[in-house]
Image (cartoon, rainbow, N blue to C red; front, side, top):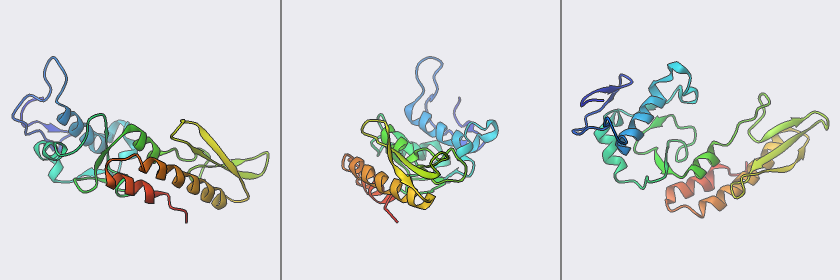
Length: 190
């Protein structure tokens, strides 16, 4: 990629150096920036379906602006996240993004219900005629069966309570207080 090329037709690469050498690794700042642009604007293949309504703020559509911000962050071994500071956020920007560990990122992403319109963490146990609540424990990577409930709402409340407990434990390990606070408040019981 040469100087002043556009990424996905919207992202301006204004680097004054080669960001993708013929041999060797691409610039880490460029890779993170280009990947973010692609998630938002390269949806034609369906590879980034979960990013359909996402976009990058005007400031970050220029590589040097994103690079300048990233240089002030602790990013080594971490993933760029737009969801943890602002739940349901759809925009990548300096005020909404933070670098988090893969563990934190996968914890907040979780897994949605694979059984229709049920809440996250809830499934219907046909044989028992009850709703089951399960939550993945980040400390061992295993799903915990929380219990069986008469309604999806009761099962979701049980899941939310356990998820909040686990989130608070994970929050205690975070160096970035913004991430810790987001974890502590994200799954508060209703």
